[in-house]
Amino acid sequence: MDGISINNKPKKRPEDVRNCPKCGAPLLSEICQFCGTYIGEVATRDLTPEYPLVECKSAKVDFWNIGFNVMFGGIFAGVSIPMLIATNVMDEIPFYVNFFMLPFILFGLGSLWIAARRFFFSMKVKTKGTLRSGIVYGYMDDTVAYNGVNGQKIKILLDTAEGKKFILLPLGTTAKPYEVNSTVDVRLYEEWAVIVSKKTHNW
Image 1 (cartoon, rainbow, N blue to C red):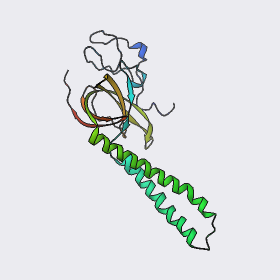
Image 2 (image 1 turned 180 degrees about the vertical axis):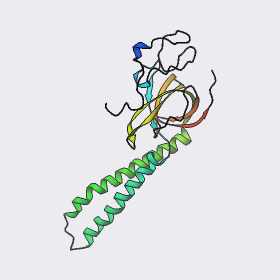
Image 3 (image 1 turned 30 degrees about the vertical axis):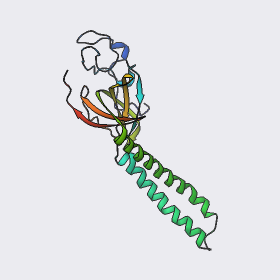
Image 4 (image 1 turned 60 degrees about the vertical axis):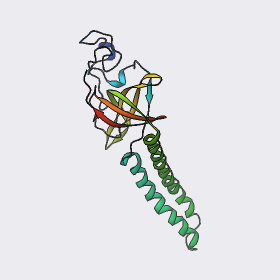
């Protein structure tokens, strides 16, 4: 097994679950498009969406999105840059030591750049993003693992200016905090998105 399918093992193949057990309508997604019944036998990753599917990047400000990169960037850049300066000030340190420091400096600065970019777009989403209400359709495994367990992406159906669309949004956690069929508010800016609230959805 490839390690990406840990949390979403399908109970049945998609071709074996063709109709809604409640109203008999043909199934196109995890939730019947006619009566709203949740079909739990089919994994999200196995379904062909009935609407366009857009992969989004998380604009959530948390440890894994920003703090992790700041920590590693600070450690690598904070140690390697002073050492680089020291090699050029102290005559007894060979000059070739500079070349050993370079990868650590680049890694540190790259991590800090990623954190800064994520924070910039998080602020863009917060100040300029469009607020949309959507319905949670399901989850699928992310390629990023936390302590050996795949993180989750949430699949949400949104009404946009171009019509209905599904978005896949990484949650940065192994948990599934939002109930299927519940309504969530999502703020969007370009390919970045963040869930800002949730509320009960009644069919």
